[in-house]
Image (tube, rainbow, N blue to C red):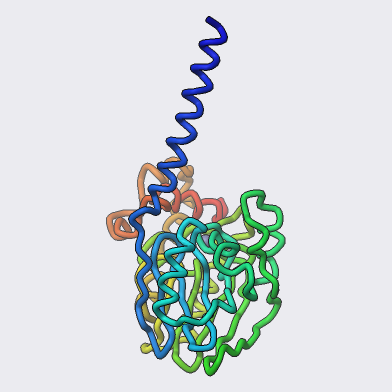
Length: 289
Ligand SMILES: [Zn+2]
């Protein structure tokens, strides 16, 4: 009887495990990788996870971020439609799983480039396939020539994480901001991995000062945007931080601020990952009594 019961327990545990694996695979089943042309040979790619970009030259493909390992076949298939050439360079904007998950599956034979703080963070992540570790670790602003296209890789002071990299295309007037921009949404600021709210705002101001009305701005999450979109994000960051600071100065606790909320003006920025409550908690941590 006891043996039967433990066999049953084992069977149902196995069924649960298999079920959850199927559910996980299912999550990517209907995802399509879409390529939007931004300039000659330069594309923004979307699927699930952080927005990617590609330079699809006839002699070699450069990819920015790799989403998830489960999407690697679909990403490769889309890249093949843009250029038959192999992937030679992969740039990671930072260390989060929805930006580096496909590294090993897509780019084990390519040069993988990231901010110098990304490699040690991925080394200590047991779930990360080490065949996808960065090989070139950037410490300062670095030009990178890919065929006829010039990119500039700019490591930023810690803000979303402590390994954030901006990718500029000066000639084409395009910037990939990684998760230094969540377009139209409250951002995730990963304070457990070196993130910092004040510096996130500083970095947003910095990018705004470097772009013009024609710049194409690729956010880590959300739609392709421009200077006006980035300015709106900055206004949200500054005003919601000031609001939380003000309420805290009036003696409200974190919970009381959550109960009161940020007001109707910012409702549209709430999303399933960074809810208004979570954003208030992030801001509260960044303020002082
Ligand atoms: Zn991120």
